[in-house]
Amino acid sequence: MDFTELYKHSGSLVSFSPGAHFVLNAVHDRVIIRKTDSFQISRTWVIDPTPSESTTLLNKQASKATRSLTDSRNNTISHAAWSSDSEYVLAASVKGGFVQVFKLRDEGWTARIDCGAEGLVKAVWAPDARTILCFSDWGLRVTIWSLVTGTASYIQFPIFLDKGFDFRADGRYLVLAERHKSRDMLGLYDASESYKLVRRFPSQTSSLASLALSPTGNHIAVWEGPLEYKLHIMTLAGNLLASFSPDPEPVLGVREVAWHPSGMFLAVAGWDDKVHVIDSLSWSPVTTFELSSRISSEVAIWREPSKWLEATEGRGFLSYEKLRGPQTITLNKTDHTKANPKSGAIQLEWNQTGSLLLVRYETTPNAAHLYLFPSPNEAFVPRLRSVLLHSKTILQAHWNPVRKGSLALCCGNRSVYTWSDEWEGESGEQEEMAECIGVPAKEFDTRNMSWSRDGKGLILLDKETFCCAFEVEVTT
Image (cartoon, rainbow, N blue to C red; front, side, top):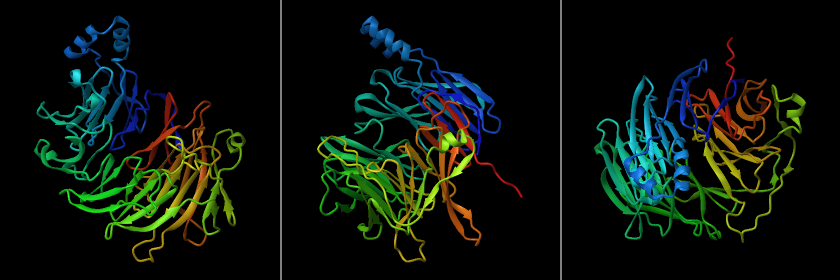
């Protein structure tokens, strides 16, 4: 891999543009755009911290100490994001209660959204790249601003401030978790008709935790809060198709949910170290994976070499050690009498084709489990294929968005880890390979990471600095 120099960031606000030609990063009150081919600065914008009239009025009513604290944070960017066509960038300040929008092709153009007394918690782009959703404080409403018309529409009483909403893959409909008359409801809104309400229907839950739309956009999965393990599958028309609850029902509820890329399967996990895979025909489990300390010899086990960073001085790469025969891994003991117990799956993520499911369990924080799903012309016998073992806790792990057999991980040290099944062995068949890659910097710990949309680059984040890594393309 080739690595760039280190650059500053704040709030982990760094992202590739959807076209992967630019990298955005925020530093306090400044948005910086760099070209990915040279990393030269292409654009720089500074947000305008001038408070709106309502914010000024509220500040006048506050004490001088509180007012000075608020003023010092008005110019701090809390959210920054690209529009889906890479034409616009939003920079939001939660403390300042405003969103500023910039245009990549016109450095002097800008637009501003003042959220007023209702406050601001989160600002996100809609899929059409010309609409911004602003979630207000206290769960009062979602304000939908159009850059085209300059007008706003409102949806009242969202349940959550930062989740509980999803767009259909084509961007046509928005599904939002709402609370009306003390009942959990789902609102379906037509984005092509100025977010006109199409229908509102009960979510079938007593305490809605969140929701997830299937990739096909035909089904919605909703699940209960942490005290009850129940998941419901519904149509966009509000019809209940099925409800799922394991037997016997665990003490705690659903924790992670992930739709298969085709919408054929739904992976569900709780705090009980089990992953249930439900199919879209019967809406019942077709297989269940249970974490075990005993790993059979049929599973490929890759272990990070001991003290490899010191041996290589953080430069170059080194293969994992491949362990032979049955192995035993350590499972941490869990105290279920305490709140938020350290157990269960904390990540479920399918690869690009749905042939592999990545699972990270909190009971084994140093391990990544890869489960193999057979192709349609093979017998349906999903199984554990590989386990990646590390010396430190895995902080992030993500599949390449383009290549089906490419995974990247980080553990909060001066390195990045990769796994791939795209290597060609001596027999001509594809084989898997796991590698440890040092980041060539004296002081840098990879705490977070994200792929470019074309799958060719990675953003690696430390607390205050970041760099990008690109795979070296070999030409023959």
